[in-house]
Image (cartoon, rainbow, N blue to C red; front, top):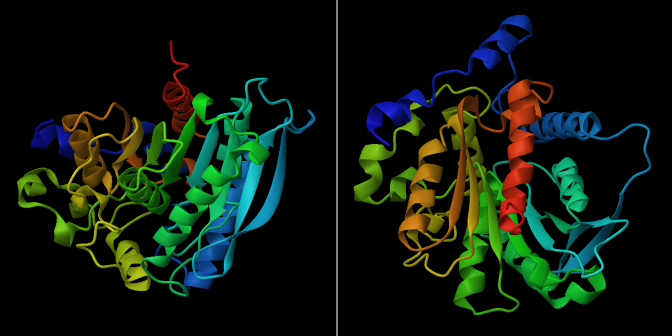
Amino acid sequence: MDRASRLALADQNPELTRVLQESPSARGLDSAPSIQALRTHLASLKRNLTLSSSPSTTAPSYTETDQQIPVRDNSTITIRIHRPTSPPLEGSPGLVLFHGGGFCLGDCDNEVAFCRRWTELGGVAINVAYRLAPEWRFPKAVEDAEDSLLWTGAHLKELGINPQQGFIIGGISAGANLAAVVAHLYRNENHTPPLTGQYLCIPTTCDPVALPEKYKDVYLSREQKDALILNQKSIDMFEEHYNPDPHSHLRSPLLFPSHAELPPAYVQICGADPLRDEGLIYEQVLREEGVKTRLDVFPGLPHGFWSWFPKADFSKDFQGKTVEGLKWLLGRDE
């Protein structure tokens, strides 16, 4: 993709232009006066997204249970286990999922709609509430994410997960960063069962300070300093609270020495997103190192747009492509 084509991905989607003309502008992630207020705002958005995607008349086809699991510092974190009420006879594929929120926002409620969609594919989802900054700074979220994956791998039978049907790690935004990092750590330690897929939605994969020189001419998306929803001010706020080492591969998974032998990756990227180009670069690097990838780009749309505009046609398109991408990870796309 040449420079002009990459820049054109930020040109606003025409439907979004109409939506913004007809309704008040969406509040960005820098609009709240404090992290606590922002957490409340995001929780409200996610509740509305869950309600908008839930059937109102039919009986639920899933069960949901919250549970505490142990982590390495002798503490516990919460996971929510989402199961289909009628699982496949051969067992369910498993998904360990990390929500987004700049390492500072969110909990198990963030991705309820997504996890319910996963159960419709017969899958069991482990929805992880890793600990958040600024109360818990880098690399605590990475540690919690890795520990939750290892816990899942040790409890597959009781969870009803058959890893031969699929054992996937995934996340959204900051959660996709955690998924990408932990996929490397899991591979490096030769854990079993092996992961069979990665779901990387709007990932942050490399701090700009640490970006290798050879990619700087195609890393243009951070020029969108006033982007809708996620802008430079909000990015700076999240980074200040998370306080990572930008050169650590635990923050910047692009910097791992090798990406070979990672499981296939389904990557989703928004065109009008400051994180766009690090996602595009990361998908390219995975492909170049022999990792099978599937890429969906949503031109002219901002970071996490489906949570802000759930009724828009472009959000319905996103949801449909997400299901198709998950089916691809499960080998059901034929």
